[in-house]
Image 1 (cartoon, rainbow, N blue to C red):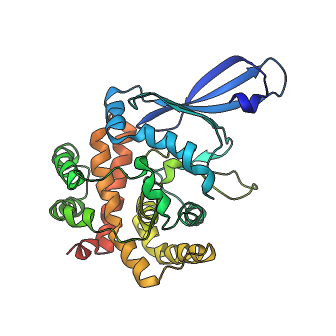
Image 2 (cartoon, rainbow, N blue to C red):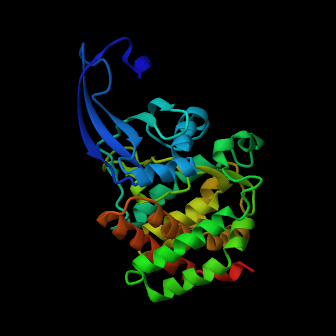
Image 3 (cartoon, rainbow, N blue to C red):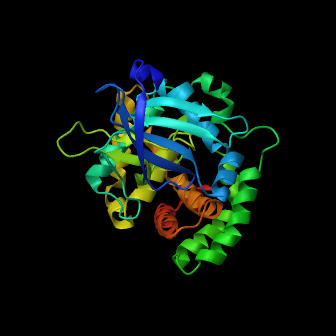
Length: 336
């Protein structure tokens, strides 16, 4: 931040809570300086959650470390649009961090509960090649420990964790979830090891939680690119997982079914323009397979963070949409 201010000093700060994050708290800080126009009028400051359970989960999953590391080590090598980072720091142990980010207001946060329009879906998907293509299949990503949290001795850890959380999920939310989705989740629990162990490459940088709450849409009449935020689940993995997750989470099932083939082809074309040729059959099969990832996320995340009324509504919207997505695509048939 000091480099941005050119020696000026902040003389006053007024903070207001913003965002809907579950793992961290965000504040819009309005700044005054010892000389006019010395720096941005406001910034977004991201800090650990005020909820002990969310912090415990974030430390266990290395979420704070991942986001700080993304901004420090990777963001400059990618073409995805994300707010400028003025400061990033993490304390030893991973329980305390600070991010100071560009405030891109008046861009507006997407609404996970309401879903998005077809035009907004195309706008969001157009940002994915800038994330996926630059380091597609790069060997360097193998060297970033924070980007791939699995390794020797962790095989089977994710399926075991999700199965344990699924029991509590059903007990808490069974009246909120479509019975057909609950049945699909039960069958998925039996095949989690296959889902977790077979993830075709090439791999690249993925966001891991690419959905409306983590996208900031520009106001009408301005350059039409979304800002992508919340990099706490960035990973080294299959790119199509981000695409399938976004479409499953962000569009009502009827709208999604009507436009998803066009959106997947749009992604294929944009990746091709970025120099990455993905054959249609392989792309579509992967898209189907990773529709299950959203259901897994809804089950696990809902049980690992502080429970709130909006959180319940959000996770149930996700569970029902992702479950219907997997059902419509017959995704479980791919886990053999």
